[in-house]
Image (cartoon, rainbow, N blue to C red; front, side, top):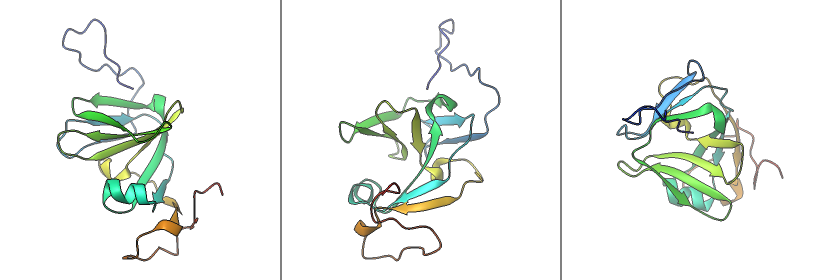
Length: 150
């Protein structure tokens, strides 16, 4: 994901994949990224784990891991949630940025960390059977009691 040129003594990131389609990052700027491909539409997750980590519903949009390039990663830290998944966050400001399944070709980013309009929509709501009791579901977005593959 982060491409440091071996000949650059300062470790500056060299991007060789053409112009970025999207830019984003954390609140303080210690983590910045570019997306050079398509971003899938977002999924809202209402599970207890996401509520605990984000304080509310989480939103994630998947991209091909090879099309996500970090341009600043000094603040990036990964938290291993299970044998299968990690969450990426900024150690400086606490912004949640990424979610990934270990050994997957995709990584999900939090759409709220994108700069400006993204053009993505929300395609589904998952783990709705576990949602908090303090808010309603949006009936205009498809609802799944568990994941969107069940």
